[in-house]
Figure (cartoon, rainbow, N blue to C red):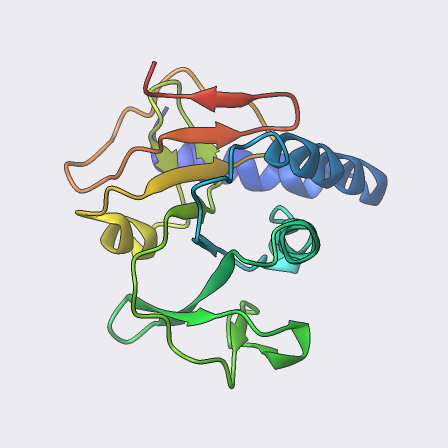
Length: 188
């Protein structure tokens, strides 16, 4: 399928979820995330959810990390829509976040993070069996991940589609994707 059709399909699937379905899927994503080996992770970049788009609730993961792995530095993005570049900040807490014009939570007083995270939790609308993903089409994460050897892990409520037909040279493949039922490894 083409990315445009997959975007539409994924948004429709998300919108069809009941509040109870959404909560259950988020809890299952967290349960799968807990299975990851975090022993060598010192910093982890994670997207903050756009609630009205029914994105996976990454605050569940953040809260769990802060409780179970307090030594891991949590890094969150702030998008510059004029330059289409993301800047990165050490996560302070929910009180430091303010929704931007697009309803994306962003840090306000957090200090910039200048290192390279060991793991990046990547947002997506859909992904295929080769590890390619469909986002909202702005390319923020593809630009950010370009050239990084960082472990790239997607979060999806739904299973992989067979193939994304219009993958571009600048599209960055995921290493893994977490769904409510599995952690799919694309390096195998």
